[in-house]
Image (cartoon, rainbow, N blue to C red; front, side, top):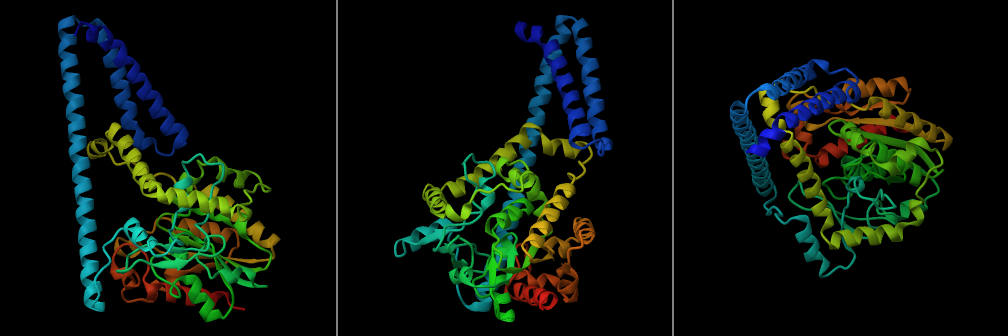
Length: 444
């Protein structure tokens, strides 16, 4: 206790000043002063702490002892409450997921008479691997954002049956092409490519099989050749970098397929990666991924064998939750005002689209921007990026194909285009209507 008495006053004084400095950093540097109203509470708290810590230098040992006991009790109580809120939230999430999955299973089994495939991705991979050595799992490029490999892959394992995802009762599986994307391999040999698609999981084809993904429907309705470079979890910077690596001169039209619920959020994380930033800062930068496919295949195959793909997702989630717990995030927002949502990286997004347009023009390709709405657009009327994104695209004079307006607004129940009308990806009908609409606005 004597040691605690000696270090008590200096410690809380240092902590108070660090809190004030951190508050200033978040308010004035990270937020550029745009969120001072929220941070005024923390300015006040840190100022009170500073005054209090200075006063403790002048109190007697008995009072200091009581203050130490009170401080330890308060901190313990805050973390116990944070633990309670964390457990409660996690339990609610698990219950919601179970409820949604149960509803999907019931609907699927009622509609098809088949049993829902309840295996996880690694289980089905192990089972199919027994009879097919060329089976693999789709690996999302974003998993490499925080790895230190010398190469950042933008595709999957090549020339392999690839297990993707299950939202419709079965696992979608596709034969990957020579570069690991979801295409018939021979598409790369065609003299002219009518459409090249770039985007995230909705472009990739989650969670349906060919010929029900957007790229396959476009091949059918246009009777022309289509290359799909979409991959799960992609944000705008990975998408632009993918174009830089794989775009050929025989492409007539580039379809930039934007998903409103997470593309700008993904961009925030992508901007922290040193390899990806090179694509923004250096027009001549390349990883030469086309000639590194053997290396990419080996890298991804080894990660899958070691179950690193599953572990990486768990590690990222655990790290994020631990930081929030240490900062007693849930307790703070339950007591103080809820923070304003983080500003979207609209300037960087605009820069990426400008560079994409220049790349398209240089390649003599026509660029189109396809806006995909999310489930919450209709369930909770949450479409906060819609006006922002449309404004940027319009200013850049890129043709804007509004799937919200052209497809979903025409539906009496827009949610019916999502799998079992629940959160997730579009169903077969949704993908089909989107592809047909895109063709209508882009055909010659």
